[in-house]
Length: 322
Ligand code: AVJ
Image (cartoon, rainbow, N blue to C red; front, side, top):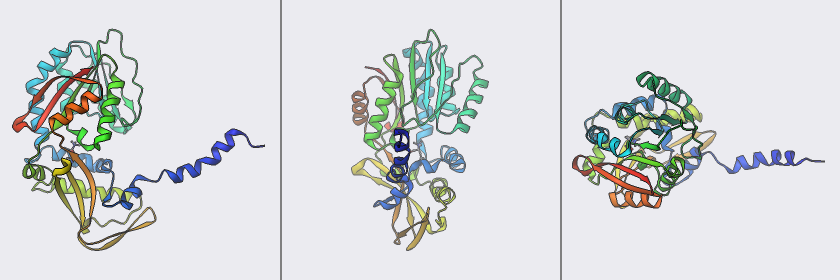
C-alpha cells in the first residue's frame, strides 16, 4: 500500500516541470526578457559600484546629499533605541551614515540572498560599530521572512530601502513589497525609502547609458552570467546595450539589442533573435511622487516627511506604521 508521503513525493517532479525556469520563461516572452537579478554576479556587483561614481549616474550622488542634509532630522524624528532592517543590505556608506546618525540603535538586521555578501556586511559593520547587535538574516526579501527577536528596550523597527531600488519591481510587486515591509516592521514600524521621480528623457538615458560604457558593460555581463549558469551560447559581441525611456510607463528599459539575426542555446533550448531585436534586462520605474505616496498609504504607511533632492529627482520618504 502506498503511504501519503510516497504519493506526495511522486507528485513532486510534475510540480517542478510546471514551475519553469524564469530565465527560459523570459526568453519565450515577447519582448524577450532576462531577470534583473542576473545583473548582480561578482563582476556585476563590481560594475554597479563603478556606475555609482560615473558623472551621468545622479541617483547615488543626489541621495547621498539628501542623507547628509536630512539624516539628523530623520534621526531626531525617530528617536533612540530603534533597530534597523535592510533588505538587500550593504555594508555601504549609506548604511553607515544611517547607523551613525541614529541615537543608540538597538540592532541591525541585514537581509540578503547571498550568504557571502551577508557575512562580509556583518563583519564590516561589527568592526565599524563594535557595540551594535548585528544579526544577519539569510533569505529572499521578496518572500515572507521572520525577523530575529529584538533586544529588550527596542522602541521601533526601521526598514531602510535606499537607492531607488523600489523602481526595479513591477508596480504590483512594489506595492506588495511595501506591504510586506509594513508587516515585517510591525505596529512600531518605520520606513526610510529612497526613490527617483526624474521624468527627463535626456538625463535618464544618459544615466543608464553613460559615455564611458560602464552601464553597457554591466548590462552585457548578464549574457556572460547566463552562459555560465545555464550553459548558454550568447555572444556578447553580437549585442549592444541600449537605454530606452518609456514615458507611458514611467520607466527606463535596459535592453540588449541583437546586432544580427542569430540563434542561441540556453539550457538545451534554442532561441532565435532577429537583427535589432531587444532582450529587456531591467525596468527602472520612475514613479511620480503622488504615485509613490499612494503606494505607501495603500501599504499601511503614513508619510511623516518627504525630503526632495536636487532638481526634484531623488526623494527620501520617512514613513511610520499607520
Ligand atoms: C539597483 C536601483 C540602484 O535602477 O538605478 C543602475 C540599478 N541599473 N544602472 C537603478 C542600475 C542600471 C539601479 N539600482
